[in-house]
Image (cartoon, rainbow, N blue to C red; front, side, top):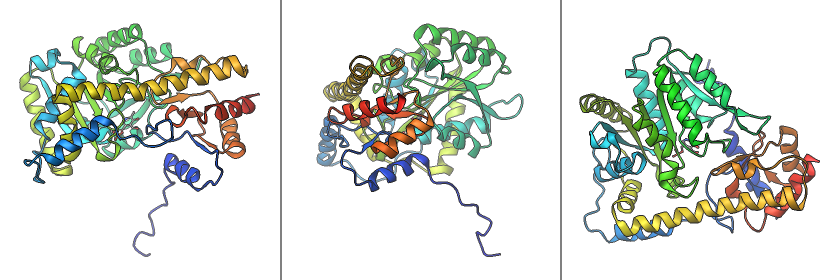
Length: 405
Ligand code: PLP
């Protein structure tokens, strides 16, 4: 046999395939609702004004060079990033028992977190992680790659187009003690369905009772509600309750730095001594994986987080993005439930949060939207709210109305 004859052909990534089909479509009114990146009202990528400012500072700074960063990343970045997610008053920071590592965006944080658990978590049985059903599809491969078997817990209930709260609690209760649960910190991808604060409190109770380990994935801080503190609430609450956890953080969405790959992994350890040991091992892993992280995006974020006026400007920019998305949710809801009187209840459109929304549209209806109206979305009925704007929302609503009638 020739070399590579035994390599099976992998299927293309479904989201990237969707984008390719959209790009190839010559229809002028085509709509792309698959994209997982913010678009402005003209359907254009948006460079945040605060990022433009930070870029100017960096260009003028004579001390900027192209040397390697330290293995664990740019210290003024990781320190500020930890404060941003854990909160400036976090007991974990006060007691210097949080370990922060700069990573290749949120994906890299997920990978490093998974790799660290695979090597160092005291597994009572087989290496397994509980993922929400459904979840960001990449979670499955990320954990499998490091020898951790993904299991799922009930999360989304298609009947209510909301949270399967009882199912979720049940699996927290029945999973063997010290299981690892991956939780989306806010703006759950792909459903847009988050637990309420009261529900988070109950989840925390059971996690503590069963001594589970929490693997928080936080890819949308600030992007969801428009408020950085609000979107970090669950993480901070779990830290205050003394739950063992780690957090994966990404600045792809909230700073529009998708391609710069700027993220962090924060491990909250029970003591400073444990944190020091964890940090030393994370440095060994990081060294063999990427040697040291990329500098540019971390410099941009460090500038923004450490300068009061840039930080204020960033909060404005975040409000611009989240505000536009929330406005699109309201308008879509109004069009469907009031104007077009589309059959069914559409309240989930405004109850869900963040970039994505599970519409409740089935695979046949979703295919019909693509084939008849040139509207591109995944067959699970997920739409990216960022793909909607004042120019195409009516077209989308009218066609959605047609396929569900
Ligand atoms: N985790 C979740 C839930 C996501 O939705 C994403 C991006 O879509 C990521 C992690 C990682 O994204 P990135 O690696 O671009 O930061």
